[in-house]
Image (cartoon, rainbow, N blue to C red):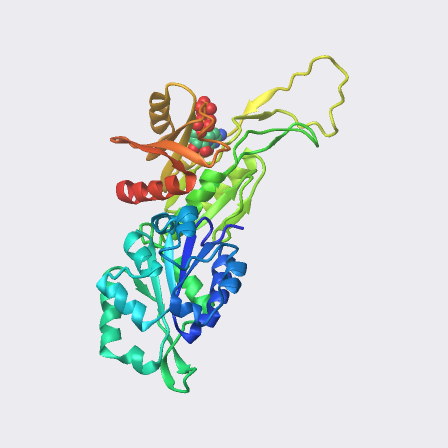
Length: 398
Ligand code: CTP
């Protein structure tokens, strides 16, 4: 199952507050959502929670010292700042919050915050009067104005006996707010259907014709569309990748099944992305019984499968249609022909002759081609390619 923080690196910063005792649970909740978690513990934090507990739950060495030569050798502070997709400071003490406002860098956590481009979530936890103080309130407003997100503390009884606002937000809520950092509104409210994976065309009860498609590019697109605010329906052929649990998932086998599933659900869609590697031909007859090897040669007569993308493009009130072009030669020319012949709004071209990218690989390099535009997205992970494609789709086609 694909989870909201899959493939995301989250650095959890823990400051000096009694609520730090909840931090191993925060690590677990972030992991539940799919994150890889590393921990940075301030000197204050270490007064309330043990490094050993955090190392055990995070399965990574805890980082706690800016000046530790050995730690710097294994993963230096700049490397750690670059590793993180998000930094969550929970609990965030009044002191660390104040230091962040001034851009101080006198310990590992504050230095990392200056050195990172990651998204930042701050979960304050402190005595209710300290939280209500004008200084803390002004400081939090300043951090918000710098695009940091504040996970508001809760109201209730505090460790010191006071009752008020200042208790650390619940670990589950902090983890969900961390996942929300990755949401944007590029496809806000849109309905997107994506076909992905390979179709399987039966020859007899045990044999079939298919291809090497893994479904990785389509699944990465599904996650990127969901994170951009879309409701996503997936029509899934044969894949070797975890399924995106936040999508509506419909599983199919053959090209005919895929066509039927697409056509019965396409009516309400705003965008159709045809990422599936559909077999172009299927056997004319499917043998009822396993074919015996009686003869030296065997011919299987094939008939052309329906072109699913072209069918959608021909609809009267068609959605925005985006196809892929898997090419091995005359890349741009062939892709432009597909754009025109199938009648789609954009084609994403990839060179499937290059084994570093395409079908089974985790990486890809594509061209996003429309009637008036042809833009290259250089080789990178399919996850980043998917995000860039969603950006392009929202900029150029919506
Ligand atoms: N496609 C489809 N139905 C098919 C074949 C392809 O919907 N029967 C879609 C693919 O999902 C892709 C686009 O059409 O978005 C182009 O697929 P591709 O395999 O590159 O090309 P084909 O149309 O099959 O043409 P050719 O094999 O001749 O290159």
